[in-house]
Each structure stands twice: as C-alpha cells, then as structure tokens.
Length: 348
Ligand code: TLP
Image (cartoon, rainbow, N blue to C red; front, side, top):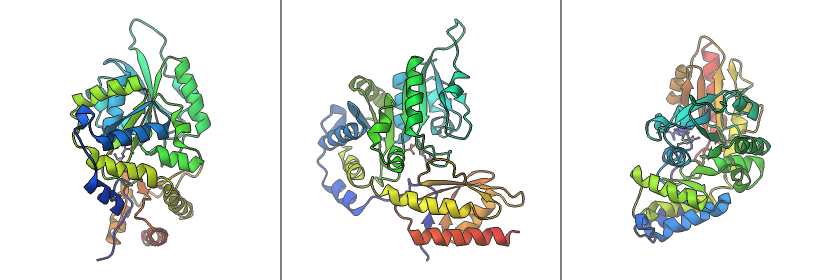
C-alpha cells in the first residue's frame, strides 16, 4: 500500500524515537503533590523559553485556553475574541459553559488579524447594565486565518491598547514557535505582549500529548487550582512531559522546513485556475485553499485526494486546509500539487 500523505493537521505527528526512549526511562513522581521531577523540569524550561515566571503542564491546548479564561475572569465577565479564533470556534463553547464568560466577537479586515480600532468598536463604556469586560484573547499563529502570523509590532500595539483599557491579555499560542521562527525572533519576544500564553507540544513539535500555560507565578498558582477542578491533575505525568522536553529543546528549529513546504504549496496552488490562497502576510505551516469555481466544492476535492492517499481537511464548503508537518517531504508536496492540478482539470 502506498504511504499516506497526511496534511489534515500537524497534530498527527508521531513521537520521535528519542521521545519514546525518554518516555520509557523518565524519572516520575506524583505531580499533584508537585513531586514529578520531569514535569517540574518541563515547566521551568517552558517558563524560561517564554520569558515568564511560571508554567503549568496541561493535557491539551483546549484545556490550557479554558484554564486561562477561568483564571483571568469571573463568571459573567465579557471576553473580547476575534470571530474566527479557535477558542471561540473549536473549543465546544467551554468558555461559556465552564468559565461562564461571555464572548464578544471582533471582526478584522481579514480572518485572524485585528487592530486596536476593531476592538474599540465593541468596547463598552462603564454602565450599570453592562457586564465587566476583563479579557482580550489573541491567537498567533492563527489557525482559521491559514497560519497567518500577527506581526510582533501589532502584538505590541494590541497589548498596550488592552492594558490601557484595563484588560488582561491571553495568547492562544498553540503554534507560537511557528510564529517565532517565521519572524526570526525568540518566542519570548512575542510572549512579552501577553499576560498568559498557552502553547502546544503536540502539534508541529511532535510530542504525543500536552500543552503549557505560562504567566506570572501568582497566575499559574491560581491556574493550577483550576486545572484540578477540570480533572487535569495528572500524577506521573513525567512520562509524557519527558517527550515535551525534547519537543522544546530539539524540534523547534526544524519548523522552518514545514514553512518552506507550505510556501511552495501556497505559491503553486495560487497559480492553478479556480483556486485561491491568500499570500498577503507572514505565513507558516498552514495553507487555507479557497475554491473559486461554483461547479466543484471542498468535499469533492478532498474525496478525490483521498483516492491518491492524500488527506486534507475541508474547513468550509469551499475551503480546504493543508498543514505541513515533520512527516511531509518536499517530494510529497510536488505529488500533491500534481494531483490537485489533475483534479481541477478533470472537473472542468
Ligand atoms: N487545533 C486542531 C483542531 O482543533 C482544529 C488542529 O488540527 O489545528 N488553539 C489552536 C490555535 C489550535 O489550532 C488548537 C488545535 C488548539 C488551540 C487546541 O489544541 P488541542 O487540540 O491540544 O486541544
């Protein structure tokens, strides 16, 4: 059977042999008592890399974002969210259901990028009838925005605007290292423009499980309590944290290769008649392809790709997402481009 070229997500990446070996021999203890040396090591490393005082190891990005919202807000508070943000779009409404927070959506000029003026439009003055607005969430890189980076200059502007309005800022930095590599800066230069950051080990960095929430020591202490409420106290979690340490120490720099493969895919797709990919911005390992022909939809193309052992994700009636990752090689990209070209010609 031919190898499957899986471009549905970077979450599909498998742990490396080195990770598996580290997991087998990890020194562990009960992390709820804070006695797991490997978790403590991962948390210290994460805090250092992101330039924050402390970190908390959590099961997933979704849990990290939810804990951040619970920790920054009081139930009933309003949270400012870009309308295509993962935290709003793909996290099962946990912000409302569990944190009890009310999202207030902001629309930018393009998916994923908002500027202070966009937020100004939805900010309310103080009034007896209004909820308290306490938090702004940002996402960098932006998933539905096709892996677009919020340029660091804009991060700075958004952060100082939010602080001026008395808001806390949480960054969904599931792919913050992609944003850092794409801009040629350390991740902590991005993280300085947020009070808390969640980032994932289990995406392009290839760890099997886990995300981290970073912030001030006081914030993380309160977040730890909220993690316990959600059942996220994980006991001998050093088994998986050990892979996370390798993810952070050894897997960041290679993200560049994923970006190069995605850039090739993006450039070539944009030359195929009937297809469109936004190229105006800084992009990373996600390619969001739009179909501009009425006679063919996303599902038809995804089904045709599957017949050639290529997996991609329809994200709307006319959009398909491709995510490059460690298992995708340059030749795979050429093959995928040939197949897409063929599908578009055959369906004329
Ligand atoms: N995103 C997944 C799916 O949920 C769509 C993917 O395949 O891209 N923030 C962002 C920006 C994300 O892209 C994701 C995962 C998360 C948070 C949630 O992380 P997990 O899956 O660990 O809960």
